[in-house]
Image (cartoon, rainbow, N blue to C red; front, side, top):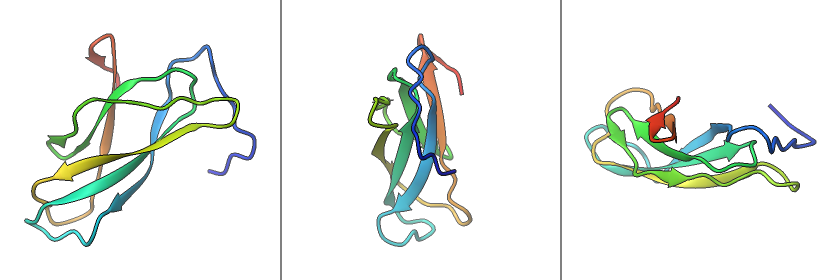
Length: 102
C-alpha cells in the first residue's frame, strides 16, 4: 500500500504493523541469526510491543510515533537461537495496560 499523504491520528491509540522482515545473512535451519523487523506506527501515540518468531520473543520495545512529517518507522532486532525449516513468520503483540491486545 502506497500512502502519498500520511495521516496522523492523534486521538487514536498507536496503530502498529510490520512493514518488512530482513535477515542478516542466509537463514540455515538449526543455526542462529538476527531478523531485522521494520515496524510502522500511523498513530501519534507510542505503544509497548514485542516481536516473535515462533516461541522466541524480543524484550519489550517502545514504538516510534507518527508526526506531521509522516508515520513513525523503526527497525528492531530479533535474535533467533535456531531457525526452523520453512517460511519465516514474525508476529507483533501490542501491550496496553499490561495486557496484550494483538
